[in-house]
Amino acid sequence: MSEADHEAGATESVVVDIPAESKFEIRVGGERAGMVLYQLNGQVISLMHTEVADQFQGLGLASKLARGVLDEARDRGLAVLPYCPYIKSWIAKHPDYVDLVPQDRRAQFDL
Image (cartoon, rainbow, N blue to C red; front, side, top):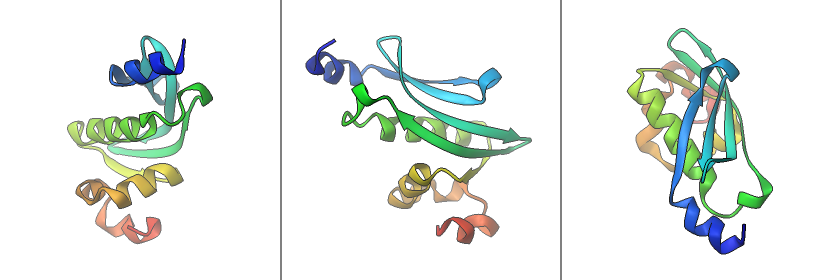
């Protein structure tokens, strides 16, 4: 697939939860382009690691993945602990998501 095909397909990305593997994936054209690994403990989701495959770098998919994961956490009423440096920095740049991190834990993540 050419770079132009990746760019066209990036707008058709979908974020899916795979609870059996404790990860969210972002898929482009059915292909896994990236993932967020997590640990779920009751109503608290710890986001541990984010990665985007090399061939999908530079398409804004990490940001779409972060937003999709955090929107899903909000929809499910989950508290978020952003141990992943990328997710932590994404939340810092999008303050409308800081409320997902429990107030008594925000200082731990510099939020």
